[in-house]
Amino acid sequence: AQSVSQHNHHVILSEAASLELGCNYSYGGTVNLFWYVQYPGQHLQLLLKYFSGDPLVKGIKGFEAEFIKSKFSFNLRKPSVQWSDTAEYFCAVRNQGGKLIFGQGTELSVKP
Amino acid sequence: GAVVSQHPSRVICKSGTSVKIECRSLDFQATTMFWYRQFPKQSLMLMATSNEGSKATYEQGVEKDKFLINHASLTLSTLTVTSAHPEDSSFYICSAQQGAGAGTEAFFGQGTRLTVV
Image (tube, rainbow over all chains, first blue to last red; front, side, top):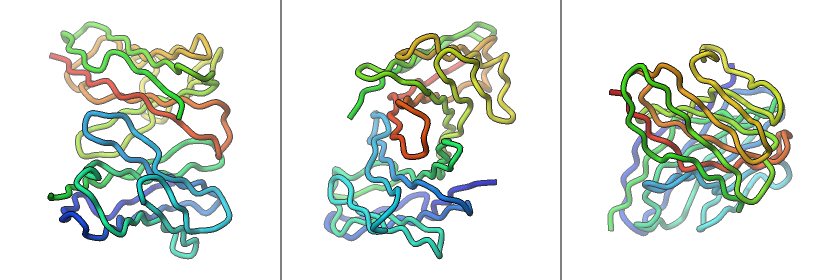
């Protein structure tokens, strides 16, 4: 069965620290990859997505992610986090059938 | 981006009653809508996929008679939790998209917190 695994359940960082959130998926076919963010009390928002082409994808708010096909990974990065980045982050994979499969989420807490 | 509105945001109901949750796409026509359930500290679990004008497709293990989904128009889908019980308490989220291709972007509602007492 297809699955998405996020390695970190809760990450605590100080402002200006660098961030990397891991995401691995299991699916052998062509996939589309997404990172979503959910700020407290708000709906899921798309941070960035990968469909094809350059495996290094840049998203909103300074986030980027790198698709490494050989490792089935799509890790999210940000060089310097801010307090306002405190949120829950979800990695997701969409297969050819059109269904979005989510990882379990990573809660990021940024200390001012 | 496109806006998806979900209503209500919170609902408390008595055990045995039914609850309806609405999901509306405000500025686009949603040919496909998805309903998810999220448990605390867990992932979003897809419950069902609904296409306008046709019956919803439920994921394995989801009771279609308990979670009734109607997608009567291109801007509205409803999820009705029938004969709710405390174990149905959860966070329900809808998403909507225009088209069904793998590259189509999905937009999410703000979720509904259901508490069954």
